[in-house]
Length: 278
Image 1 (cartoon, one colour):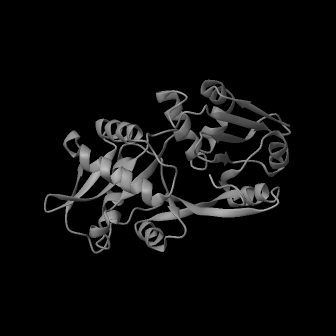
Image 2 (cartoon, helix red, strand yellow):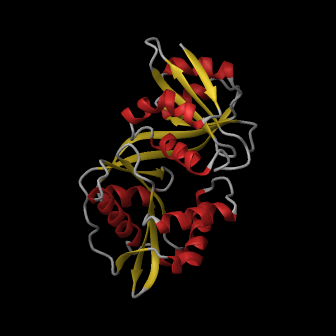
């Protein structure tokens, strides 16, 4: 039983790819992160070199992974509990995003810790159209929407409280997703009022993100409508699983998604050492 670490995404996927694909819903974060690293290079998420790792269990198979793309926290995925102690001995960690039980096991190694965020991973069951249906129609985003989309991506990033993204990263995300048909707008009277994006389809799964409605258009069902539309389209395009994350501190968004057919799969926590201000 041992940890192995690398900064080479291809070496990581050679070792752990089969394990990741066997549980694609639970491994959605690491699948999308490694896809971005392969597509855009080692600095896809920032100037620092990423670190990836995998834990081999008693039988020699991969029983959990780690991925760290600073300034984002370390993500632990489908990790065996017995891997936590050796990991804490091998690396200095200050912020970890993991399933609740593993996050708590990591935090137990710190003299003090804080819970920074709690998330829930949802998986789409039977899609239920929003009722009552909001006014408007969905359409694919186009290059003509670029300025609006850049403003909305920046606003979403600011509201979600993650590390600040440079303008270049927003531009890349908007341009790439627009060109590939992975951004959808909801319009009312020809005016865009909400948006939803989807990830690349990886190991049969698609994750809905980001979903954003400007404050002046909230409370009218637009987010539910555009999320339902991209969820339906993803299934029709061949996705076996459609996923999304929510912030558990936001009962409104959790209620929106459960009403249209999303069902809780697992909870994750972002925990940090008490003195970590990053």
